[in-house]
Image (cartoon, rainbow, N blue to C red; front, side, top):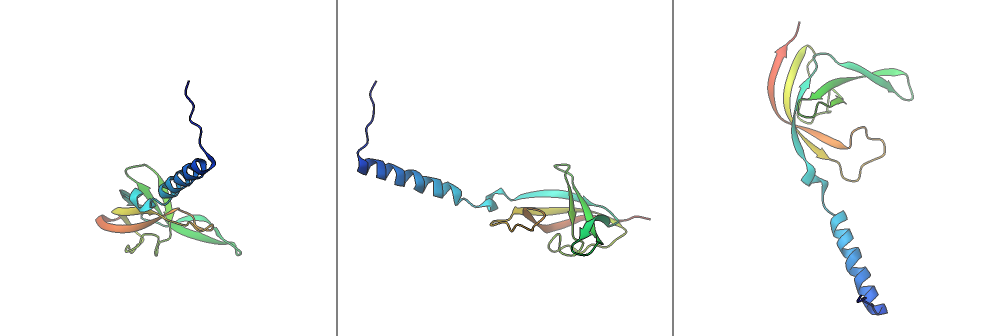
Length: 125
């Protein structure tokens, strides 16, 4: 069996090439992982925990992904960029979901939500 033996300089070059390749892969942007999903948004805000340090209840929009069947609890103002929520209506919206780079520790979702279009807005009694 043949073995490849590297000289100290060869080892250094190999290590440099390996780490350069690893850094290139690590530098790939999460923006490439953006996706478009359709959400159904509930007509009423739902309680979703409390706001420290007080014990005041936080109310959120309940957005259910029609594609992945996941539920998201988003702030009614600003949870979906470009979307204005009005209680009493069921919304069906298309949203661009983009992963957040350099994620802060205090963030709830590791992605941002941006309105593409409102597909429907139906009044609920």
